Length: 228
Image (cartoon, rainbow, N blue to C red; front, side, top):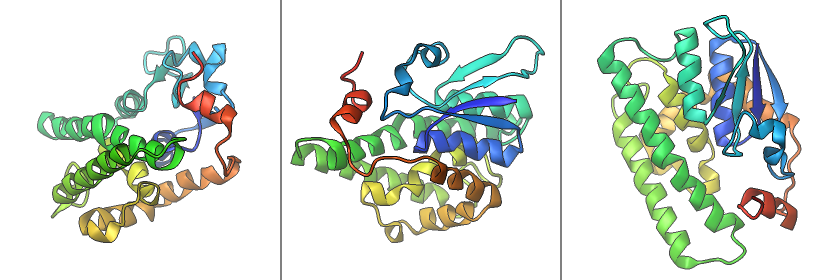
């Protein structure tokens, strides 16, 4: 059994996508990041960076004590290695998956997240910041679009954790003001994966969690670093 500490954000979706694709048994423990659940001592014990998602594996491969893992990229690698799924064993193919997983973790997630912050959440609209992150968002979509030309999946012929890492951010394209018609290879890849039964089930989990439609001062405090 996997305990998944989760909230329906792109990073949270990465892990439900894996668990659904791999057919693993899991239990969701909601972490309401707008209410400050990420600062609770019991959560910090497994995720010291006060970020979700995090997991606790109660049946690790070594049959030892439960294993906790934080950071979405590390969780994807851990689960892929545990199950032998969605990560190739051949060194060259494995290398490619890790390249694109790290591309997402270092760029496609953080830059799009900054886009969300400055265009949607920042109390003061700063034109330079909005323009800077929109331009970088568009550049990164261009990188992914070129990569997917002639490929069914990001790392080649097989679905991998690189796709699971990138797809939830592309799935939120309206949030960062991107029209996928301008990136036809991304749109093709996005739509094909979104139709997979496991993806449908994973994204449908979002409907179970009520999130405020407006950002409150309390949520800003919890989300944007005001609370230590």
